Length: 250
Image (tube, rainbow, N blue to C red; front, side):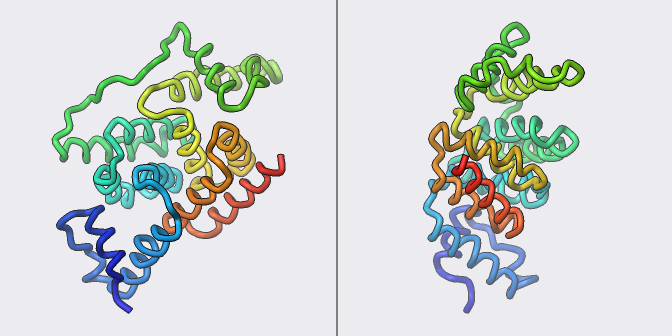
């Protein structure tokens, strides 16, 4: 069968002038993976390349695919993802994956940006500060999930109420209020973090519902799942499809 022309051309768009190592070491595997990920998936899942690669980067963070992230990050930038957008994806992942999982990806991102001659730190994107982060975070929650989130930050048992406050001021106030990505893009990458991480199906269902509420349709989410499947495998992709269906029913 060999590598298809489409797969080869798409690979050349991602990695101009580079010969893939796997062509020489694992030709049969390369033939199957590249023809699937860079031909069949691309042609059947119609997505803007920038959105496609934002989803791939977020999914690789979620599944802890650090080596693949390092390879795909320059490709994502070649496909239109800006340095600011890359940093915002990595930063926001901290709220959903924790610093223990994100720190290696932050280091990789800084290494790749420096190799490309991009000066660090990048221009700041913060829109909230210590004075208004809780209020701004609550407003982001309301904009995404609805008015029922207005007082969520002070709800729940007294002994754990501080975590709901942290969701407002830290998760949403510190990250979602930043410029660099809009709310639809931030909800899309959150969906990818949760889908690829696995074991977060209740949260994934809630964020599937939130995605659809702000305009990322069921059809769009299915495209995102489909695009990420080569990087996270079938079990988590099928779980994500089930969560989307559950969100539609809600």
